[in-house]
Image 1 (cartoon, one colour):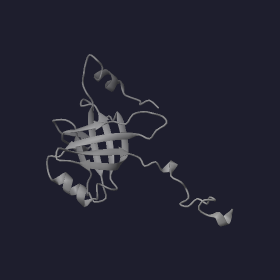
Image 2 (cartoon, rainbow, N blue to C red; image 1 turned 180 degrees about the horizontal axis):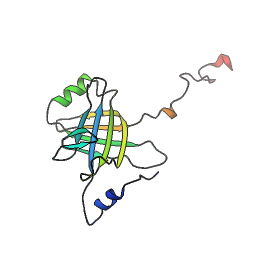
Image 3 (spheres, rainbow, N blue to C red; image 1 turned 30 degrees about the vertical axis):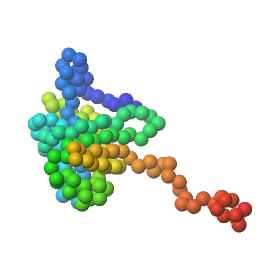
Image 4 (cartoon, rainbow, N blue to C red; image 1 turned 90 degrees about the vertical axis):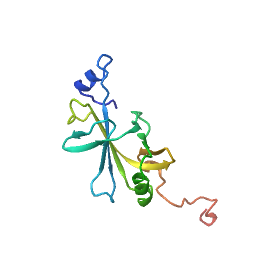
Length: 157
């Protein structure tokens, strides 16, 4: 299903204007008293009363494919030790949800795109921490732990 974008978004991201949308990230976890809120920009942004702190990261937004689950990629520079310490304490961020929000700087309270994904996998090296965001494919998990087939239960057949 295509995204419904505002007229402001379509005008500002056109070829003549060249204004890029801002990507906001909100990370929530049971161990966090308040969610972590960052914006991929060099200035802080207030969106609907929440302050998003300027922070450098790269994100690949989920696509609109109909027959697959949405999946996004997030890469954060491994600058400080705080992020790695939190990942170790929370067992890789297990149980975290990440909200990806897209806005325009000239209208920060108008949310153009909003999706909340689970933190699926996290990997880190000296330079950066990368994460895969998405949903667990619960619809394709077998409903039974044990299937009774002639190979594993010959007495039933």
